[in-house]
Image (tube, rainbow, N blue to C red; front, side, top):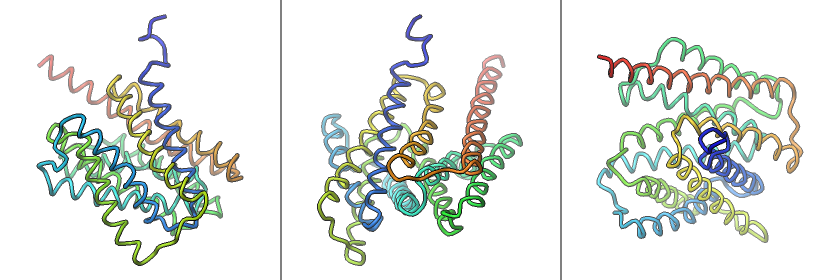
Length: 295
């Protein structure tokens, strides 16, 4: 069996490692539930920005970029989404917080209707309905999740959708690390000013946890980039949803967060709806590409 015939290609392994790294970063965020979420954003972005500057220096790329407005907007929406996601991670079960965040691809597609003039077909709306039904099922049968934190999670996913569209808009116009860096810089600035209003001095292991949030987040980004460079997106993107498995297991083992049959069913509906949408979109794009070639 050749490397092309096996499922565990280098790209797939890199995506598994990326998902695991992000899951571990979220574990440390939850360990820091007594620290304000924006304070964690500040430390996380400070550490990640250092890695970005090193990478840009080695690549000989311009860190300032040329699309300043788009870079600023990407940073604002990305920082807002990250902050709200950390709030949900700190206040509701880990698996549920991550599942709600998985709605971001849906928002990415819907927002692209207005930003990039892309079309959404009828079957995709049906798939989106399945995913949202899953989120409502989780909230309805899990007393640990209030409507308040559910809405915060949904707004976070929406913010991620806007940020992803801004990233797509700058594709080929900015170095990828420049785009990532400006996200980190906005997080540093906003996080720094927040410290004057809501600061809690980290103690003991808190410093190590804050450092690990930054390190594992950056490792996740490195493995993700590596996966997408080694293999087509279609071949590795689905692996990203292994994150829900990590979240359920870690939430149960580390935080004692059990899941009901209904909440697990809701998580599966979210994953099913999003995956069906992604696969359908790729099928449509492949058919359009074939038709344009024939024409």
